[in-house]
Structures are given as structure tokens and as C-alpha cells.
Image 1 (tube, helix red, strand yellow):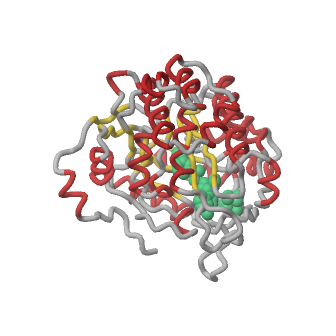
Image 2 (tube, helix red, strand yellow; image 1 turned 90 degrees about the horizontal axis):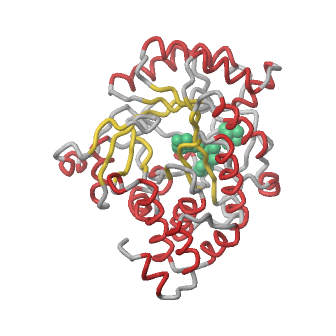
Length: 394
Ligand code: V47
Ligand code: SF4
């Protein structure tokens, strides 16, 4: 989006004052963020997001869009919680609930390793059989066999659950997992921090202050982590802005968030299908742009292609996103709820999507060390035949 921000300021647009703040690096306020959401001038909002992204990246990296060659591992879909938006956990269909043995988890990890992945993103349901020992063993075994694979695992929700069951502090729980091989934490489980939304969605786990405390502790122990926000679960614009403000405040204190990921709810198999308003394409793009502008202390904003779809994810890159997440291997959580996106993308497809949108694909590791800049050659030819790295059929 090549709309010059100076023109927005000079033109006395309704958002000129916010544009001025973005240019000057002045923090926007709660009211500013709400005004951005209330405006329907998507072109201007996108241009502000794009400007903020470029400014954060610096001139030499302003076209960089990151992705990672990774896989998702979900050791169990059995969960003691019953969040109304989740159809991944506790499936109604008999025989679909599973709890993998440590050996099975290792087999899956080995398939990813054979394909050259450099990150495993591991999260699972909350169930007594998946206890602290189970996760310690998995982390130790994977790190022993594949030391080069970065273990991004355990949401704050799982840390809370495991610590409470073991009757140890969150800090001690994190220390034990770090000793076993935990290297960073994904951003799941934040949902919408507002308590009334959580109550409507029957989210009993990990209230905002605990979620933030656990991430703060992880940062102090030297881990990087991410943060998410799940939209389409009856939240208001104010709820979204307040969610991001709590994250901005936490980041000011502990500084370890790498990336913010706006998520979008899928409803298949949930009890809220038809009862909540589904975010529009406009809403999704505003989430990207507003988060980029409001979260001025977050280095990266993700366009999670699994949920946005590849096409909106491409557009999101010119609204402030600078990361397309990963190749993934086999996504379960959103696909259980009806997502029609592929389960995975090959590296070449990822690079193709980024290049086609006018950006430079950059393969990264989990903590944003650059592995390789630029497409790998014949990306269009490779992308036209969808490759299937891992067998989907289980
Ligand atoms: O916390 C649950 C959400 C999250 C549904 O850190 C749903 O790099 C859509 O956190 N429709 C897990 N979403 C995913 C997640 C994530 C994904 C990619 C990258 C990273 C990262 C983190 O999925 C859960 C919950 O908010 N979720 N049910 C649903 N029906
Ligand atoms: Fe369990 Fe997480 Fe699903 Fe809630 S969202 S039911 S905590 S797996």
C-alpha cells in the first residue's frame, strides 16, 4: 500500500492526528486505537500499519517477511476445560480423542526432523496423564535426538495446570521444563482477557493476570514468548484494545514478547456457531494494523495464514504484519473447527506467497535469527503442485 503518510497528515484526514503520532513515534492511546477500529477508511489504517512496520524494521529490512520451517505437535486432545469456542478438545465423535505415548510423540518429531524442520511448536489439552514428568521426558528425548530443533512449547495455560497439579510455583515449573529442554513459549491461551467475555465462553483457565505473570516469569528466566488474541468470541472493540494494552504494559516490564498473533475463531463443532458475530475481512485486517500501531514494543506481528487464509494473509503483509508463521506440518486446532486452509505449506509455497505480495521472504529460526533471505529459485513451479510433506491421514 503506497499511500504516503505525509499526505494523510496534510490532508486533514479524521485520522491525521494518529498518523502524526505514528510518524513521530508517539504512543497511541486507548481512544486512538478505538478510533482506528471505528474508522472505515481501511486504506488509511493499512497505510499507518505499513508505515509502523517499516519504521520498526529499519530501512535495510523494510521488505522482509519472515517464516519458519516448523511443525505443530499436539500430544493430546483430551482436556479438562470446556471452552465453548474449542472443537479440538474432547471431540464428540467416538474414537477421535487421543493421548500419545512419549514414543508416539518422538515418532512424529522424527518425521519432522527428517524433513529438515528447525522448530517444534508443541501444545496440548489439560489432562492428568499429560503431567509434568510426561512433558519433561518428551522435551529431554527430543532435545537429545534432535538438538538443533528449537522447542517452542507449553502455553501459560499448561504451565498453570502443571504447576497447580504438582503443587509447585509457576517459576519452579518453568525452571524444570527449561532444564528438560524448553526454549520458548507460544502465545496461546490468552483468548480475550476481559472477564465477561471469558465467562460467556466458559473459559475457566488462566485469568489475564496469571497469563501475564507466567509470561513475565518466563521472560525473566530468559525465554522469549508470543502473545495471541482470539477474535470472533463475542468481544467488543474495547475488549480488543484493552487486551492489547495489557500486553503492551507487560512488554514494557519484561520485554520478552517477540510476536503478536491475532487469531480468528472457526465455529464448526462448537456450541457458539451462529450465536456470535464472525469477524469480517475488514475486522481481521484492522486487527493486524491496529496491533502493529498500538503494540509499538512488539518486534513482530504475525499473519497466521492457517486462520486468515492465504489470500488475506498476503494482504495483511501490507497492513503491518511481517511474519507468516510456519510451514506447520499438520495443524489440528483450527482444522478441527472447520478451517479450509491446507494443513501445511511447503517452504516454496510460503516464499511464493510472500514474494507475490511484493515482499522478501526470509526464513528465520524461532528467535528471529535469519537463516536465508530471498526465494529459493523456481518458487512458482514448486508452488503450483501442492506438496505434502507429512502424511495427513492418521
Ligand atoms: O489458544 C481454539 C485458539 C489457540 C479455536 O505462538 C481457536 O507462534 C480458532 O496459540 N478457532 C492456539 N482458534 C493457537 C496458538 C498459536 C498459533 C500459531 C502460532 C502461535 C505462536 C500460537 O487457538 C488457542 C485458542 O485461542 N483456538 N479454538 C477455534 N475454534
Ligand atoms: Fe482445553 Fe485449550 Fe480447548 Fe480450552 S481452548 S478446551 S483449554 S484445549
